[in-house]
Image 1 (spheres, rainbow, N blue to C red):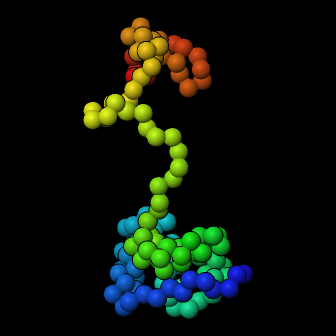
Image 2: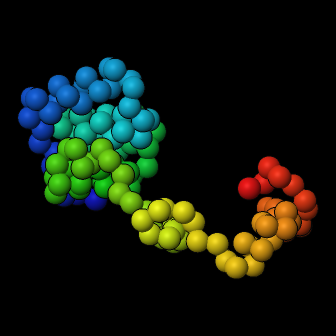
Image 3: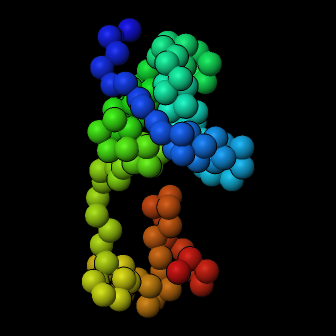
Length: 125
């Protein structure tokens, strides 16, 4: 275990807010897990004990601590956007851009299915 680099300090209001969120149980499971990590870290519990008690990875505890210290507890609860291909839309309308080949195939009623085969269907649009 690396030495403790990020020490989590929460105010009483932040602690009460996290405890209320956990007790309510309506948030996403990842948010609840991160809230539990923050409460245990603020209580001074070591990372290895948090990992064992909550059944999470070391990287999750470390990144949650780091985000809390650098950006605050609200940012630590949320996920950051993941990398990936940007959606191909036509701008303002938000409709997907289709290749000319696909437009013709749709008009003919022939659509390529997930298995790569073509078939006639009306529900695959």
